[in-house]
Figure 1 (cartoon, rainbow, N blue to C red):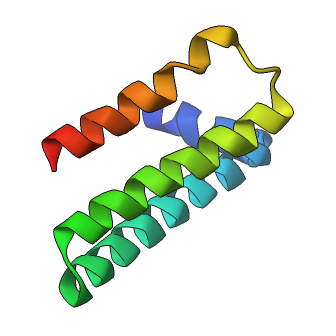
Figure 2: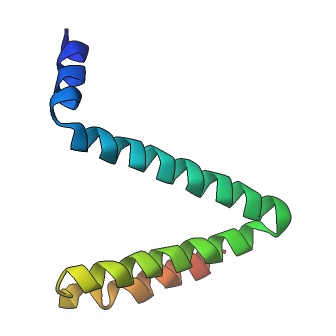
Figure 3: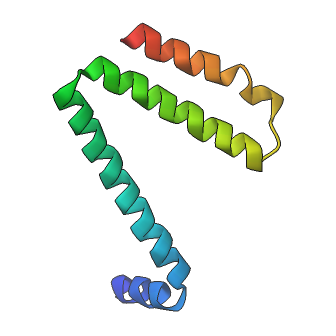
Amino acid sequence: MMIVYIYAYLYIYTCILYILVGNVVSIAFFNFSGISVTRELSATTRMVLDSLRTIVVWAVSAVWDPLNPAQIPGKPVLLTKYVLIS
């Protein structure tokens, strides 16, 4: 019965359905591009590109949201983690 409510909710609020479909397409594209990079180059290159993607998302989000001072040391810590793992 719960599934019927979910479909009814998605029918009423179609914006949620569009966001859901966009999220699925985004994840599928990310996985496809990651596999393609790993096949042609190496897993290390994929890791570097993934960290660059994180930086781009962080920079774009900083434009829309005011920068929280606690986020500034977070990015170098995250990049250090990537370096230490690879």
